[in-house]
Length: 102
Length: 534
Image (cartoon, each protein chain N blue to C red):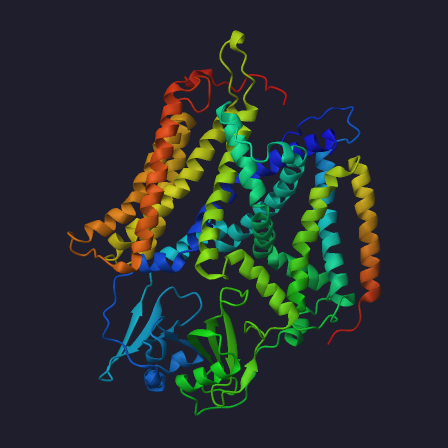
């Protein structure tokens, strides 16, 4: 789709493609990591009855929240930087919290 | 709210809306109809002769006689308890030889002990409505269609957030403003905003759950990879173990199993007994039923050992689930409207129709916004090709789906004489849907707008008309079972007729340079015109 234009003097640059891809891709990986963190470190532990289903349901709201919010970043570059950083933190926490499985 | 943020999100809103709007229109309209799947199925089904009724206490006899005759059914069959018959219920057995089989084998026993076994192809009309709901366009390949609807739902989630952001500044000021006095476009916008805002909670629930339903395979695959280190199947086996009883027959009678169920949860209203792996150590029976006091996934079940009646699992029994299971069940219930009885069912029906209108009006507003601002002095407004095509697609796809669904429901009784009813249903839906799309592009949005509304009105009126013709035409029938469907269809047809009249008036008398005018000449549409900056 052609990128619609916004006022170039706006303090928020549209950067449609850059922000959209950052939000969609990094938002998804972030949502998976946060849901996984909840699976391991959240209440009940990783093997609680049917918790894996709840964990899966968490992905959609987390992901869409990031996609919806990513246009608030001042530039596309900032979206990539912040979401990339959040991913690194979330995956580090996930790796640390993971334990042995049956 | 800063104006630049509002402006940014207006662009987001209009783009995600235009990309997903038509798919979502079909999903919502068909979804509204799925709230009445059972009445629809009853409407197309010929009335059954009532002689095959035996009381519940002969259910054990029915099961053992079936298994003696058809041992292949033992691995998976259901004993259906006909609703409304209570303890003296009418019983029927159903089984399929494999999952993909559309035809169902049924066995019923008459009072004199005669066993009536036959293969039936149940009308797929309710299933077709559901498939159209879940896939919007591609019932032929359910999986692809479901993924596409899932993606459209994700866009819809973003449209929802951005729509709310856009409206925040004006929310207090013109929330309930319906500016009738001003232009038609203003009115469409006001209705769009009002419907959108008042149904936000419903839409949040639907959007998030529809994303899950459409994309859960990908979500689980990602979790397996990243979170469970490739061992998710093991996690599932521990967290949601399949029921594993270890006894062989002799088995308890259906009446005894229902008594055991009532002892565990008297509030469950049983609808069927689903037997699996009878005659093996893994034999299990699931007593399916409803419990209106809880949010459940359509239905719940209690798993029992069919030989001893011991409880094997309560993880899907309403009121007896663990916290996580109960929470996930609640998500399902909120999508399906499977709680709160008829009040919620009707509310979901109306909110589904309102949702469909939301997407229709959204597309319409996009079309209007893309028209070059009218300047009386400078001659006719130019319409870009994108606007003309989108207007035609909006009219053709939306009204084509409406007319197609009505036509294929109405055809259900006419088709009942055919060998392959269900192919007929598909052919009719697609013929009407694709025909309407082609018609819209050929005639242009202005003319097709009201012509297809008349088609929708006619196709919907064909439903009660078919019932009426049942009095005079042999082969058709009159039945009380579908009376509600007839009444709703009659009202729907009336509503479409009113809309058709209004659209026709606008096409004749409205501004001639509008996309919605029937008087506009196609020649003024040029792709070469520079597009106006938005």
